Image (tube, rainbow, N blue to C red):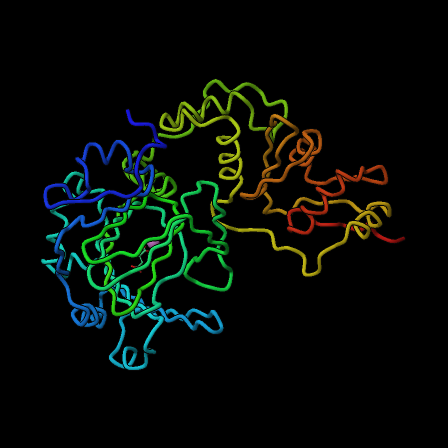
Amino acid sequence: MTKASALPIEVRGSAKQPLGMSPAQFLRDYWQKRPLLIRQAFPDFVSPIEPDELAGLALEETALSRLIIHDESRDRWKVKSGPLTEKDFASTPNKNWTLLVQDVDKWDADVAALLEDFRFLPSWRLDDIMVSYAEPGGGVGPHVDQYDVFLLQGLGQRHWAIDTNPDAPKDFRPDVELKQLKVFEPDHEWMLEPGDMLYLPPGVPHDGTAFGGPCLTISVGMRAPSQAELTGDLADYLAERLPDELRYTDPDLAPTKSAGEIDRAALARLRGALPFAASLDDTTLTDWFGRFITRYRNAQVPVAPEKELTEAALRKQLDGGAHLLRHPWARMAWARGKRGATLFVNGHAYPAAAELAERLCDARELAPGKSVADTELAVLLILVNDGHLVVHKPRRR
Ligand code: SIN
Ligand code: CO
């Protein structure tokens, strides 16, 4: 096995080896691990698509396209999403703009044919081929992508800058909708000519700018579903197939000591009902279940008071003998955690001392009185201001 530090970041390709090495070597040493610039991955490359064909595609009703113009003097970015019109193109400046069209492989068989050279990857890992056209200075600005991408230069020159530092900050600029990086400090820069290809694994900051004249870049992008997407879809898939009569059951139930508590026995029964969630730790399972089970079936939620109460005002009311009534639509449960406990109310989770959480779940009406401690008051205040508890003043005689 080659030592990581000895692996070159730049290699030369050939008609036989577009990756400059065997696919097996590329997958072992670079894929999902480190960037690679391949000079002449496709020797004598001729772009399978012309800029005006790309512009024509961007006019199509269903094509996914974006026109991005950078006002360099004020560092403002204008993004227009497609379908674009002839007028949009007529009003572009003579530099600093780019047109990006996604899924070009679905529209153009010559572009799709490029995928033949990526057959060493599972076809379902491929997402699409995006093609960009840019006038000098045009680009989308420094950013990171969440998926692997092969950036093949089709026409003209593009200057690429990347930052290989794995700890590079990834914060976005708040003023630009393009998820551009606030800070970008490249440690590698190259000028790419037609046929050159830059491979980037996910998360590597990069910035590509058209240089000199018109520039066409062909991005072969991978599909990398997020764990959130996978989890959501798997849950839907399983839910659709589970018969309604399979339910949470508790034939072993013993009399409750604390009515609102989600105890260890309940957690164990849950694991039995959710075998696919068996690997979840207790904290995650409890946090999810507490939120889930306290959400009302018919989505009735307590309304927060019009005016937020301050801590001082609540203390004054409690000192004066006010009671706290649980809102009729506030559904509560609690669970012990590693430290303290969590009170669940209508899908929300509030950290609270176990003793307070238990008391709130047990009684519909609370009379905290004068002795209420600051930490307790802070929790009560949040619950009052979220509408779960309602202050009930004593009647004046
Ligand atoms: C481009 O082609 O301009 C952008 C491609 C990318 O950075 O992912
Ligand atoms: Co990118």
